[in-house]
Image (cartoon, rainbow over all chains, first blue to last red; front, side, top):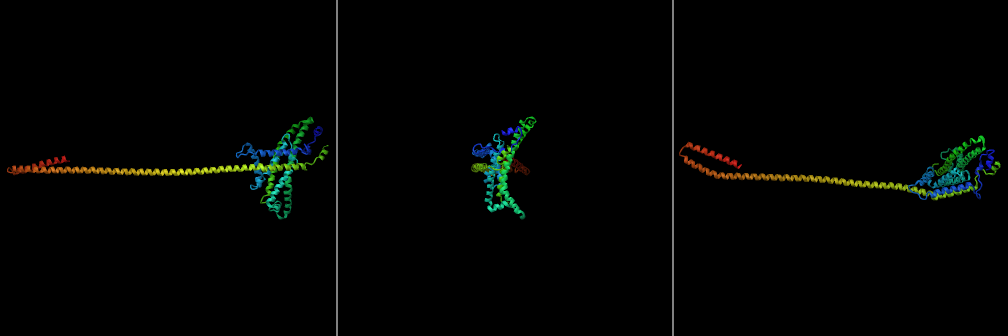
Length: 257
Length: 182
């Protein structure tokens, strides 16, 4: 409300403050409630939806199976290999579904906030990926074996090997998991900001009076367009996060590399 | 005012410990549920489905094999029946020929018997004729002798004429008799 009063005289675009919420009760904020809500949704879908499964699937089961097959087949199986992928299905499926639901919250009316724009949440998921893929690597190759496997790709000339080792280790143990979290965070942060900007901007122009009222519908339409674009980005980001997790695991336990 | 607010707010790139912890806990719960319930259910279903499809294929193959076996059995039976029919036909033909041969033989025997009987009758008739002739020739010779004795005195020339006429009569009689016998 304070912004609206200000906006009547001078437009202040929404900034980082948009992502800070007052606690609802105790220390619990809106993003935390959304995270729990998304957990409930995903758990409910995958426990209630799989209670009675038939060999010949009904419509609902078919949809659920189609969704399940994305992380199972196109991510885990294709990236990790048909021998080892089954034990990683829960992780990949969990990442994909959890991030997808949280991202889609951004365009669900009333909720309208992407949980992953709070860096803590994608970072928590990246920590899981980090633990999973390095654990899998150590288990597969042994400690020294895995360090060597991760640090030095085969066929590297000796004179640049030291440089490659440093880059590879930084990559595997720092940049990859960090970029995983930052990618979805930044996309959700920016997307939410853009939609908010369009909404606030359209409102400002509408009430500014005079000639400024004329472009207001244009900005409003642009906001709707951005909403559709964001829907696409939200799905892609969930897909990319889970897919990259599978790629990292696949690389960690691969034989050839 | 905005500047002061921004300064008070934490940077969005710095994670709030509460959110980080909640994120870890929430995702741990989710992972557990998926690992314990959802994924095993899906994987079990997929295995059952594979089994069902492979089982169906196996059953179909078994049925096919059974059908092939039955077909072979029927074909064998049919071949046997054909052979039997051919044998029966051959038997019948052979039997027919035998019957024909027997009948012909019988007929020939019958013909031979009839011929033999005819010949016997002819012989009997000839014998009877000869017997009759023999008796008659005696009588006729006596008659001729009587007539010769009676006319001996009259004329030598008439005598020879008388013999000629007598012999002519005999001839005529013999021809008539032979014709009648035949």
